[in-house]
Amino acid sequence: MSKIVVLTGMSGAGLSVAAGALEDSGWFATDNLPDELVPKFAELAAGGSRKYDRIVLVVRGYDAKVAEGVEDLSARFPVVLVFLEASTEVVVRRFELTKRRHPLTADRTLVEAIQRERGLLQSVRVAADVVIDTSDLNPHQLGEQLLWYVEGDDGSSSMKLTVQSFGFKHGLPRDVDMVLDCRFLPNPYWDESLRPLSGLDGEISEYVLDRPAAEQFVEKVQSLLVDLVPAFQESGRSYLSVAFGCTGGRHRSVAVAEQIGEALAERGWEPRIIHRDIER
Image (tube, rainbow, N blue to C red; front, side, top):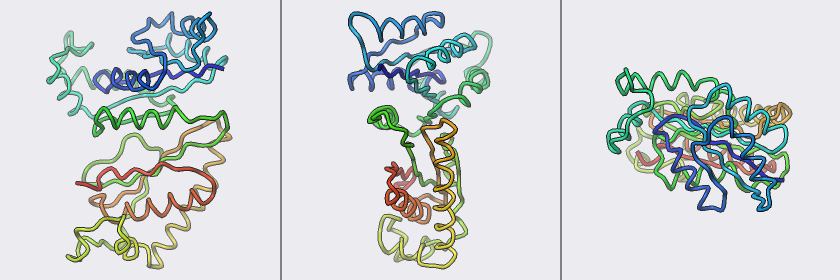
C-alpha cells in the first residue's frame, strides 16, 4: 500500500527543501497542489498505471478544505502529516535573504504577516503527527531529520522516539511533546577542569548522574516513559519527543538524555538522540 506524507507549515519554514530531500530519496513529490485536488491526486498516483508507493503532497495555505481531504486520505492510505515551523526572527531573515514576498503581506508588515499565519495554522499544527522546528537546521539536517520520521517504517506499530537535550538560555524547543528540567542537578560548568567537556564524556556523566537525586530522577523518568509510550501508541500516536534542559545544554541535560536514551534502547525501542546546543 502507498504511503503518503502531507507536508505543510509556515511560509519560509523550508517546505521546498523538505520536499526536495524526500524527492532525492525516491519519493514522488508535488508542490502547491490545489486543496480540492489533494485526495484525487493521491488516489490517482497510488492507483494509476504507474503506481507510486511513496508520495509527498506539499500543501501551502492549509485550511478546512485541505483538512477534510487529508482526513479522507487517512481513511484509505497510511498518511503522515508533517508540520514545519521556524521562529519569527529566522523566517524574517530567510525572506530578506531570498527577496521573496510573504503571502500575507498585502496590508501587513512582514512580522505581522508571520504572526498572522502562525495563528491561522495553529489548528493544523496541533493535528500534525510530526512538528519540526527548522530554525536551527541547515538543509542537510532538515532532510535527515524528516527522513528519520517518514522512512524505515516496516508497517509495525513501533513508536518513533526522540530524546533531546537543550539549554534553556537558548530557548525552549518548540517541536517536542514533553520538557523536563535538569537544572536541579549539580552543574559541572563551575568546575574549571570539567567545563570544556560535555555530557558525552565519562567524567561529566559520572559527575552528574552518580548522585542519589540524579539516580532517582532518571529512574522515575524511565518508569514514566515506559508507561506513557504504550499509552500514546494505543491512542494512535506514532511519534513522541522528550526534551531535557539545563542552563547551557552542554553538560547535565546531555548526560541525562544519553542515559534515558540508553535505557529506552535496552527496552527494545530505538530512540533518536539529539543534543541541540552541545556545541554552543
